[in-house]
Amino acid sequence: MRVVVADDAVLIRSGLVRLLEEFGCQVVAEAGDGEGLVRAVAEHRPDVSVVDVRMPPDFTDEGLRAAVEARRRVTGAPVMILSQYVEVSYTDDLLADARGAVGYLLKDRVADVEEFMQGLRRVAAGGTVFDPQVVAQLMVRRRDDPLAALTPREREVLGLMAEGRSNTAIGRRMVITDGAVEKHVRSIFGKLGLYADDGDHNRRVLAVLAFLRS
Image (cartoon, one colour):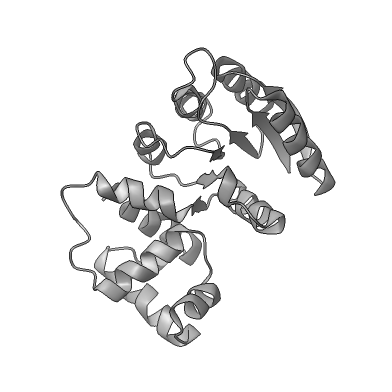
């Protein structure tokens, strides 16, 4: 897996590079600011970019804005936001094209390196992975609710899907069988108008994006 790493903190960036290389990734470029990220993605077209939110010059949301610009230049370029902060101002723009291949994890909540790598691979493959705190912040901003037809149980399942959990993992979390999870997932797809010819993986991504943008 070819990766671009963008973080202004040299020690954190170097540590992340070493970690990725230990797991067999090829880090094709490093960037310390948003402009560097955009250039690196345009030049190397990596399988995924790992991006911090706050970078020079203002240390507000430059990383998010740069990720949006990188995906504009290289359509649908996979991006994993990895930050200490939940900043949703440009997260909507990352989700707007409904292409998936987007993740947002919080540094201090990544306790399992293997789980992080699984999430990174999922994003590189076109999926989505969002920390529950990020999901909660996105939901706070919403006024209209196009998912009103979903039951509370279905919304819970969809929220866990947004965290990148498999049906089996959702079943363990909710203490229900795999069959029950699959029934909820099929119902969610039906209520959102996502039909079988979209493919199960793609339908999961579209359902999660609808949830996060709702």
